[in-house]
Length: 149
Length: 80
Image (cartoon, rainbow over all chains, first blue to last red; front, top):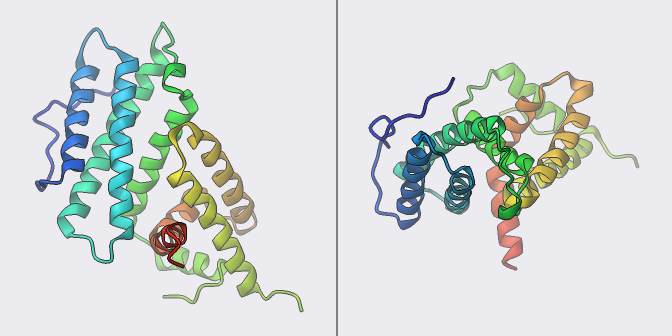
C-alpha cells in the first residue's frame, strides 16, 4: 500500500520566485493534504491535480522553448514532475479502489485521460534520468537514419 | 527513385515526433486518444526491430523532441 509523503518529506532542492511554480506547488500541497484525509474528496483532488498538471505543462513549454533555461528551473521542474507523478499514481489507485466509483465526467475527463496524463509524467521522468547504453542508442540512431553521435 | 533507408528513417522519426507532440500538447480530455495513437505508431515501428516501446519514446524525447517542439511552436506562431 502506497503512503502519502508528509509535507516535510516533499521538499524541493531549489527555491524559485516564479509564480507558475508557486501556484503549482500550492496546488500540490493541497492535493497531498486531501489525499491524507480520511474523508477524501476525490473529485476535488483530481480537479486540483489536473490544474497543477496544466501549470506543469506551461513550465515544460517554457523549458523546451528557451535556448538556455536556468539550471535551477530544470531542477525545480524535474522535482515537481516527480512529486506530481507520485501523487497522480496514488490518486489513480484511490479512484480505482473507491467503492463509490467516482466519475470524472463533470471534469470532462475519463479515467483513461487522467491515466494518460500520469503516464506522460512517467515518460518525462524516465527519459530525464535514463542512462543510454551506446548499443541501444546507436541501434535507434541507425533505425531512424540519424548519424551516430 | 525509391526513397533511401535514411529517408525512410527520417520520415518515420518525423511521424512519431508528430504523434509525441500531439500527445504532449493536446488538452487533457484528448490525452487517452493521443496516447493510444502514439503507442500504435511506436509499436508499428519497433516491432520488426525488437526494441521496447519505452526505449523508442525515451529516445525521441532525449535526442529529438526539444528541437521538434521548438520548430512546431515557431511554425504555430507563424515565424517559419
